[in-house]
Length: 479
Image (cartoon, rainbow, N blue to C red):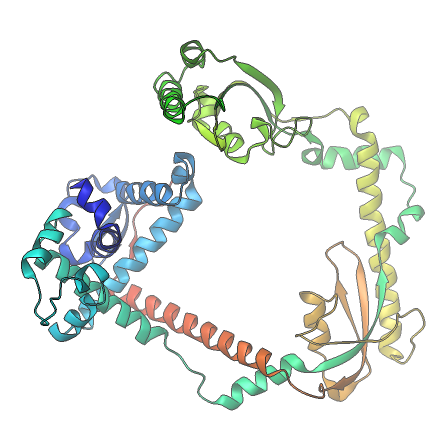
């Protein structure tokens, strides 16, 4: 059977995708979820549960498919994404049944004929080799009815999604109006008030610094670190590839099966147990970038609960071609508040910066109030520049929104916006213009983006409606 799957890999992938994953709802998943205790039920859709085990099994399969580790498959964000995908699949399956969708035999035959392995079964005279077709499906453990029902179901899902998400803007002029808004340019001058300009005016007393330190001890904690032992298995260029592969298998198996120590693997493969101290969640800065303790996957695995609490070996990780690593936590060093004497300079820096930001905001506020009365005062403002949503120059987020929200009928206008550095910038807008010619490529791209966003909104609204009809209930949260 494995030979047949390898021979017909593309068809097998199609079968796995359309039969194993999305068609659970079609063939009755409740027949086996009923055996599990209700504590394992996460969500119920139309009375049928999605269980913890189902999420875990799918997470493991998807992690393996994309080359991820078991730690990734067990992580809450990854499992939540898998659960969300399963919920969407179930809702689409419910919609297919609720809307009584169907696929004609003629359309099914036409679709099947597009699969290369099946297309090759048509003889020169136009007849179809049914015996080969049945044998091909039998090789991957399926009957003709199972495969065609799964394919029919998949086509219904495709048609449903296409129909729901196929959204065109009701009027081409709307796209043109929105593009015009993005192209509209405004002449802007800026005046910045940054903390750096005021930091020299801050002279805190020792009492103020001590008070700040006591109120913000979390800011002055040493990060949690670990002391670790690790093994590195490297391929010898003179060594036969098969020999190394055997060693790599032994390395992975021994470190996993005898997870309480690295010594069995070290003795078996004649490797030296190495150590590293003070490894943080971002690695160890004092070590080289290619050091095992600076490999993201190794460090993530070491800070996993199983490795931290139980001091067990992490699964072998291939950090480079021909290089495998396993490691274990020897000592966990929790974070702790550092004494004031050790962090006094940092306390002063942080206090001064916050105080300077406050002074900058006060100065900006005073100037802003004056400009509301006299917006023609350009003293201190920079050189005028033309900006638009298509060409924002250095304006981002709230800054650009504030500038573009100004009523062009009331110019000149001064607005205030806070930057990511905590500083305040005043923007003076005094002119509005349209560019001499629109960029047809950019307009076409924007129209496509608008249609895509509209399609996403329609699809999300459809799924929300199906959630109501299918009576979706959250039973237990993912843990």
